[in-house]
Amino acid sequence: MSPGHYLALSALLFTIGAIGVLVRRNAIVVFMCVELMLNATNLAFVSFARMHGNLDGQIIAFFVMVVAAAEVVVGLAIIMTIFRTRRSSSVDDANLLKY
Amino acid sequence: MSPLNQGVLAAEIPAPHIEYGQLGPMLLVFGVAVAGVLVEAFVGRTWRNTVQIPLAVLGLLGGFVWTIALAWRGTPFHVAAEGALGVDGPTLFLQGTILVLALVSLLLIVERRQSHFTAQASALPGSDAEQETMAAGITQTEVYPLMMFAVGGMLMFPASNDLLTMFVALEVLSLPLYLLCGLARRRRLLSQEAAVKYFLLGAFSSAFFLYGAALLYGYAGSVRLSVIAAQITRDAGSETLLLAGVALLTVGLLFKIGAVPFHMWKPDVYQGAPTPVTALMASCTLVSAFGALLRVYYVGLEKMEWDWRPAMWGVAILTMVIGAVIAITQTDIKRLLAYSSIAHAGFLLTGLVATSREGLSSTLFYLVAYGFTTIGAFAVVTMVRDSGGEAAHLSRWAGLGKRSPVVASVFAFFLLAFAGIPLTSGFTGKFAVFKAAIEGGATPLVVVGVLSSAIAAFFYVRVIVVMFFSEPEADGPTVVAAPATAAAVALGLTATVVLGVLPQPVLDLAGTATSQMFVR
Image (cartoon, rainbow over all chains, first blue to last red; front, side):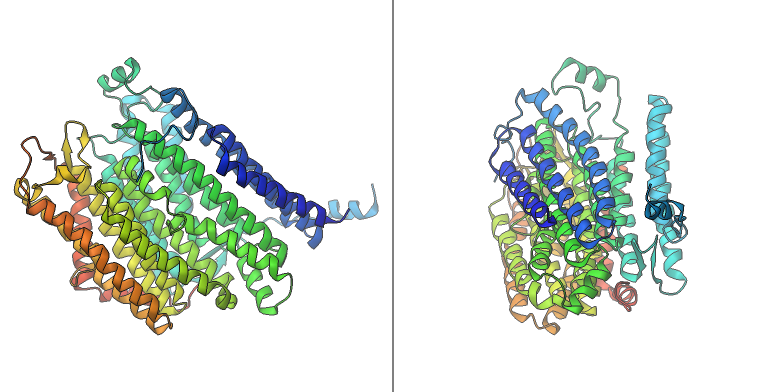
């Protein structure tokens, strides 16, 4: 299979993730959609690495995985604290700051 | 195993060559951050503050001295760490600025007389556990290592010479800031909400940044900015990948500086975060993110100027106008300063659009001037307090000029500097970027800039009128002038006056720093 198919899949996953962030209400699901976007990026990096025949893209994918893991730690901690206070992780309920 | 594989395995992998001396400021700050984490783990609770504060001060001060030393020995102009980081005039200038501004913000963070940070972030607001920790006089000292990690990331962000390093720096600076936003002592629900919003939107935007980097990698076969620039010059590769990549990358960068239409997080986060953290974000993060934006556009995308310039024009105009217009309706002083910060991001973008050496040096000067003024303004906000903490609502500031003329006058002076009145640093900064923009052929942009400055002046003057020409409330807020905060205000004020009256030395310094532009 040509790498082009993987690129199309990566673009599709990225779009699904971006739409998910915009339409979903639960902070955890929103966050999962962001992770989906990061993984779509990884797929793009690896496919491009295959197309260019160098290893940069594959190495970058490792970096992205580590950064994404760190982001999960921080993100879940923040979502946990707001859930414990409000008993809800809906992003619509957090509405004290506006205008 | 095939002979080819054996060959690969037998070949020696050369160890990367790292210029530790050149990267000293960054390494020092990161080292202090790691040491701070160890202090949290091994030093008793009562001693942590006394260890953490000198450690943080030493780290920032040492980093600053090191930066000066690097700049002193001729104008440095080379890449370090196998080309991943650039050490050049603009970078050192930005790093020095970030370190000084971080030191001034640290003054607000260390304030003991009125702690801004929660005793224990994990204790529920209003719970018994929270009462107990408050009564025990515990303070959250994790703030210092978190701040040092954030500052380390900020130093790395404008220095990154490839998009991967830039992405890692972006995350290293953002992740601690997300946490810091949620640590306010009072109005904790607002603070936590700010942290969630900042985190979700920040993660969203960095995903865009990364996908842009992936597309540019697909275009050029490397994430190094110089290789991308060379590929653009050669006019080879898929233009679709290039344009889409640049667009997505720009979304990520513009989010960090808070340019319209990616500004929605700024008012919420600035309002909800503890005010010292807001001061840190409004000054250091802006300087750092602008440095990265300048490097990407001046090094990587210089040759496709005609493609991105119209888009940047649009963003700059929208940012200036929308920031200034929405600020008029604000009633919360921190939100007002946030919208003012959005408008200033727009003024700074005119310096980027100029795409010249003057544009770069005037932007650097503007960043210094604005950074000091904004820290000073937020420091004053922490001083005006009532029983519930900071009195952030504008109506509570009524008659402050009668109650406490000195503080009100200082704040009025900062507002005039934001508005760009002559003899303040704001005027010199705006004059420099607008002049560079006119020379760069962006006269309409400057006209819009001047008009939106006039709109902005309206709401700054409105605050001054509220402070000086209305009657104070009977139960109005009191002004608490704690020593460290007062020192931060004094530094901000001094810089605002000096850069307004005698700007030439710093203008010259910015000019010298940009004499060779960015290293490739």
